[in-house]
Structure formats: C-alpha cells, structure tokens
Length: 221
Image (cartoon, rainbow, N blue to C red; front, side, top):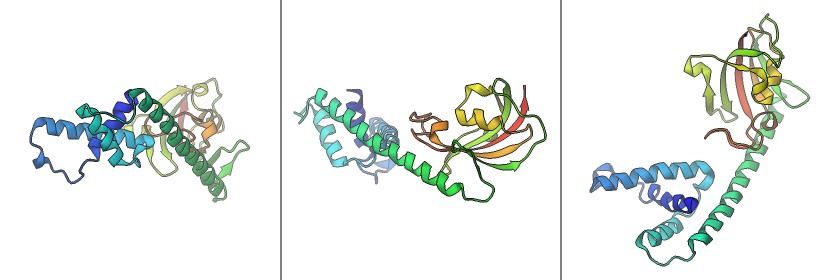
C-alpha cells in the first residue's frame, strides 16, 4: 500500500506545470502542490518519471473520491512491486553497460593505468612518503563523481579531510591507496564490482555504478 499511495500522489507534481503561485486559492492548495513536487521528484529519481500521467490521474481521482477502482489495493501493490522491479532492472543494466563502455574508452587515454582487476588510475601528483598497509588508518581528501560528472560526495567541497581504517572502505579504495605514497594525488576510476556492486549508496549512486575519485593521501595515522 505504501508504494501505491506514493505512486498515486505522483500526479500532484504533473497536474499543470503552468500553475503559478498566485493561482493558489488557499494554503491547502500550496500544501497539495508542494507535496506533489517533493513526492514526484522522489519518484522520478527512482525511475518512474516516464509513466503515463493520465493513468496516474485516473487512479488518483478514483481513490481520492472514493470511486470504484479497476484494481483492489492488493492488486495495485503487486502491479507496483513488479513494475518497479522491471523498471529498476532496466536502469541497473544501463548503468552497468555505461560504466563498462566508459572504462573501455578511458583505458586508452594517455596517462591512464589499468590494473588486472579493471581498476584504473592517473597520477596527478606523486608523493615521496611511504605507502599505507590495509590495516592502517589513512587521512585523505577526496572528490567523488559519477561518469557523467555528477558529484556525490566531496571532502574537498566540505573543506575537511577524513580519516578511516583502510580495510573498512570499498575494495577499490583499499587497493589503490596501498599503491599511493603519502603526498600523492591520483584520479581513480573504480568499476562497479570494486565499488558498491549491485547496491545503491545514497540517493545518487545507483546499483552497478562506476565511480571516479580524485584522492589525495595526506597521511597515515
């Protein structure tokens, strides 16, 4: 029922994109529109943005008015669950293929080094300190993006480096940082299987996502 309710409310973000603030006749109109924007944006981020909004409107109207519906709530839950899996499956496969194609093209670029497991990196600055062991704690600055350039996390933007045990992060980080002397700054390209695999991580990193990091190894603690 949770998914059905959210799906029906998606209509509120699509009903009339020409609506102006001065057309709201009450605070409840503003509330309804705001709910639609927030819920619709969330559903779009989950892959539902291409659904037929006329059908969403028909279902929403029937449910809100208490009119007979074509499906029972139980049937709607099943349809939404199966449809969600189908849509997300297509998106996940697309992420996987896009990442593989990106890495294939990237490996031929000057300065890019590819390891046997597919991990790639470029040396932006080579330090002269020692290399950390997997059991040690490191202090780093980093900037992480997707292959389309979308930033998902950045200690650089926050203005504060972070420290963490090297064996408690994604595999790509554990491996590449053991190759970096302290003082180095590298750009690292991490295949999905050395990142989060078939799992999402936050609202931006989808399953099977290839990740790009600029990592500066500041020290070993």
